[in-house]
Image (cartoon, rainbow, N blue to C red; front, side, top):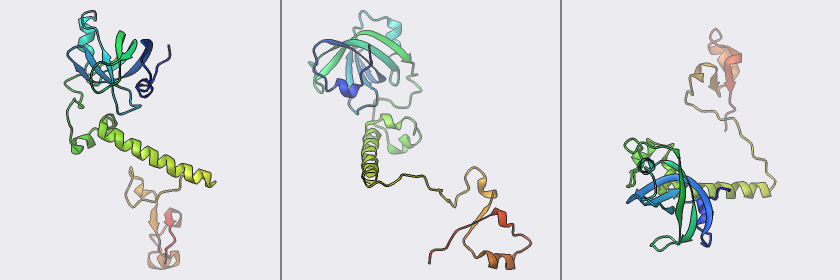
Length: 200
């Protein structure tokens, strides 16, 4: 069975069809309701677990940040906030998450805190929305120039900051090389100077 993205599941009409979804646990309430997200949308899919028939060791491993795979039936949701929900038949833990160490807990986090965990911040609703807007804008810009038959290329970037100790490789200057030769001929090594044209 092919995995379906949560973005597409939320648009699907429920008819008790069996599907498979994979994603990260955002919340797990009452040992029964999992809010699952795979990054395809900011909205979560509610997965209903039969805790009476699910092994205790599996339930303990369903923590915030854990990666799981769920096979179940898609039905119309009776709860508020969602139109469909997935009744779990089979649940597999793909990756565990230590509940005490995982930094993204189900609460509001400050932007200062999220800067410290840049590799996880895209999982929050705030940055999920920001990155989607940036993606749409970047795509629109690229599409515009592609339609105008421009060629996208990566130009060399000259930075005033020393990156990884490469500042000793050569010196960047926009001074006239003839003047430099007269001022400090003994210290000047032409091969190690990168000349930049001055804009006047």
